[in-house]
Length: 463
Image (cartoon, rainbow, N blue to C red; front, side, top):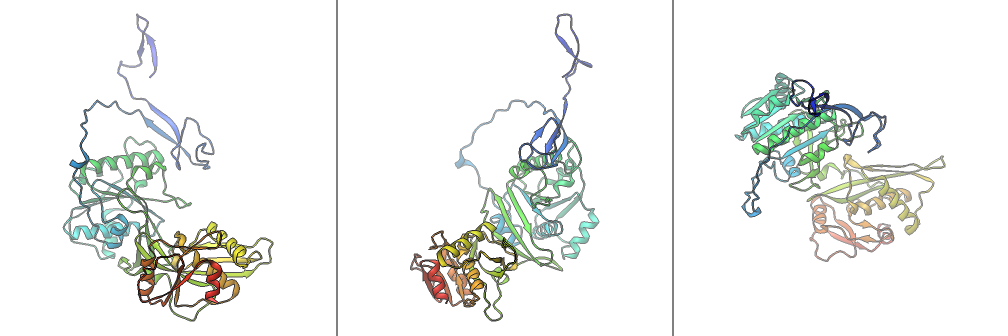
């Protein structure tokens, strides 16, 4: 507050007509971590990101009046029922459907199918007799209708649409809906956000208004978010902390398959994976994803091993491919797709020290077929045997799967939920499964079990 003159008693008087005005403050905010600074700098002092500080205008928050709040016993709180989206793979990742009053953030690369997925979910819920709202800040109503017609969801049901970039104009119709979709958070503006659409202050203000409206009306909302060139959701990192669920929709444009993962879920598991196939009529859930990630055709080839991994409660058979080749350079390449580079380096060291298979003068390339990203450590055995098979030019049996984590001593450790993995391998027609010798004896019938204590024993069995 600025003081221009003094009263007769010596006390200062506010400038103007004596009414206290809220002062707007100019700050610079980091678009990655939300750090605020009074001055601009080329690099964020908090997260170290270059060129991420942008100028924002912050208005003083109005004074809140005191409100008496009475605590409620947890046993007296009614549990809300989830609202299914009508798409089985989507509901699997959510944990069974939308929880009333929650806000879900869906991110993904441009053109991967984020809007298509949510438009299909809205159409399915509307066809089931639910009231649904789709708010677009990027497309006109006619453009949304064209897209809905293309995927065969052009009519029927109580699906309301709004085309507006002012978030305040779109929050009123949310009342009474089963779900509301906002496409996308970077395209909306809030009156008190300051700056241009997509700036950190605007993204935060828009998200806060959607969250407050969803909580007050008990209507689940879904926000679509753009991603940066690094693959993270654009906007302040605070956005991911504000929402209840964070989903990422990924996939290669050259491939028809899309993967939906949960990175944060306050009301469900973060390990579930949804698999979709993009077709002319939109996204189709894949009922048997295991068959996407391995090929049963052809003769055995060196450098190929089948591993059974877990994504949440769902087992997958993943095809791990390895290729080794002499290098003319002093530093050989280590390239991994679908498996962490650090994990590959670790397994190469174990093969060298515990099994005598050295790749120090060889380029090593590892790939998981189908674009699947494997984080399950129990794919170690398949990874090691694929690299060993490529280095020795020794094909592995095509009717055998491999399950187990490999330790630094070369031991094969028991896996989590091994019976479920063995059952999945048997269902897909595999005759043998290699597991740790320390696994339980209670395993499903119908498949031969090859029990090994360490990696050296596994190589002997395969030879």
